[in-house]
Length: 180
Image (tube, rainbow, N blue to C red; front, side, top):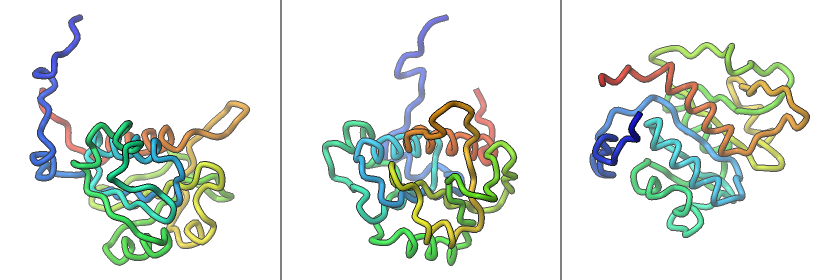
């Protein structure tokens, strides 16, 4: 096997990316303190053609050297916005027809592999602070909570890792296959 070259990858420019059809998913970051995590989420959102990312509360926002270090320019291709309050952000997304799904370990959560993704539905995926998780107020305002199944001793994943797993899951269910 031969590694693919940059030409083989058929990369689009940041401007072209803005016109590419996105999956109907918004990602909400609720008080994410690490700008490296923010950059990683933006880069993953670019990879899986996420519709938008909403940065809330203390979450860092571009321009930022730390965000750029992991986003590698995705902060310029992915549609992102800022809201002082994650609760306000999810209420605005609900008004736009999004189903609010907090990614959190709560009583009554649905395991990711059992969560039924409906074609035609819009989803807002909320990821929380590295220590405190999604705020209780946002959990209370959510339509559902989704939990990533884990069987080790930590039962905790880095937010960038969690976001990548969940975005990939939604991408595989909501995107059309790309012809080779």
